[in-house]
Length: 344
Image (cartoon, rainbow, N blue to C red; front, side):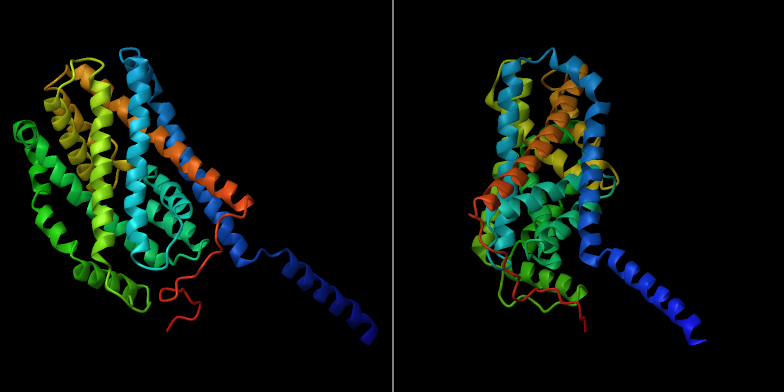
């Protein structure tokens, strides 16, 4: 009986050993999910770009090549300013993260906005942040607060387009009562208290310091700069059809800012598509015809999509180059926000 039992036991042990060897580890699965999520997000963005290409190609024929090139470069500067807004607040919540690393987390992660539902960009940013030792709560707090800072700065600049809003988009007036609420939430102590609530939800200790006024101010200024550049981007496109003027620059900057806020709350649409365009078309019809305004809004939207992809790819490339050159410092875990596998 022993002779017949030994091979069976050996076979069972070998099978278990083979299964244990072949079974992927949890970190490997998480890494695989990260890459699959990034690929899915990029696919959504490319699909959107392809679906709009017929309208875009027709509209581009009416816009000068110089206006498109310069407008796109200004748009990239706007994305850079928006990224610095996020980085400034992230570094105000813990140990300093280098700009290339933080930019990669922010820019690649924000591609999740092209998937219906606002949650995907936050999830992707949190997962990307973990590979650099940035805790998920810290990334989430930064993203949520930068979104709030963006609403405040966009509503401040959106006041520039208030006459147009009163004329054709009264439904947007509900956004402006959010401005005083947002300003109150920008106070460092209020911001710290809200951050502690988020950390409590994640069962993490509260911040060991108050978010600095400097970090909040830097984030706000970078956010305002990004919206100014976005407005300038649209102004350059419109100027290919009309004579440029300061009045049109003010109007389009305000409209672009309001469009971003309206699109942010339309979270069921990927990247607020359609909502921002409605605001821009309403503002641009003061300057151009409705078909021209529609074409310009589509061109602007597609340029944003291309810029998002270019910026994310550029951020990844820069980090890879720095890593190969051994310039990047080692990853440092958050001391107060470290995520332990043993939760209380």
